[in-house]
Each structure stands twice: as C-alpha cells, then as structure tokens.
Image 1 (cartoon, one colour):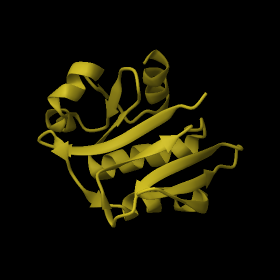
Image 2 (cartoon, one colour; image 1 turned 90 degrees about the vertical axis):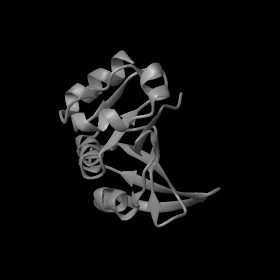
Image 3 (spheres, one colour; image 1 turned 90 degrees about the horizontal axis):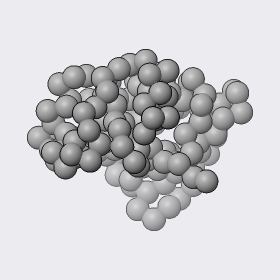
Length: 137
C-alpha cells in the first residue's frame, strides 16, 4: 500500500512559492537519481538505513510544495523535511486528518478549508512527535 505526504507553503490561504532549490539542497546527499513525470520529476532518494523515497517536484524553478511517495522512517529524511518546513514556513499534511507546522504563525496562513478538514495543526520540530501525529491520523 502506498502512502503519500505533502509539504506545502501558503500565504493568506493561497499557495506561496519559494525556490525549488531549497528542497533539492535539503535532500542533496540522498539523491541517487531523477525520474521524469508529467508536469515535473521525481527525486529518487536512498538513505543509509535502506530507506527509499520518491519526491515529486513541479518542472519549475519555484514551487509552493512537493509530495513524497512512501516516506521512509529514516531519521535523515525527517530531518530534511523539518529543515524545509522551517526554511519555507510550510505545513506537512497527509490524507486522512492531521497536519504539522514548525512555526505557530503559519497556522494563520493556512486555508480555512484545510483547517476544517485537518483540524488544528500540531506545532513541533520533533521527529518523534511528527511520527506520532501521522500514526494517529
């Protein structure tokens, strides 16, 4: 079964762009290849503990977010996710319910519809707390 997570940036309820390079730099040490896809590409990631992931990014220099297919448990992966969230004031969310932010001020920029579906975001930079949120969601 496949599981996806999404990291997206908003300003006043609308998507807010940032340089795609932020995502590429955070995962740079773990990229072992790239795969073309409609409208973008997948960064293929591999971690020392055997974890693997595919990160979908748009075919643009700027992005408002990205999707990760089958996020691994690898601590390096989650450290990079937190780093990206902090650098871009993004929200991490997944299908079902629940979302995580690292900066409490980000909550006010999230779309009202997202909050209605996902509920109040958890504010944390702790990887274990993020895992707990996903497990509960």
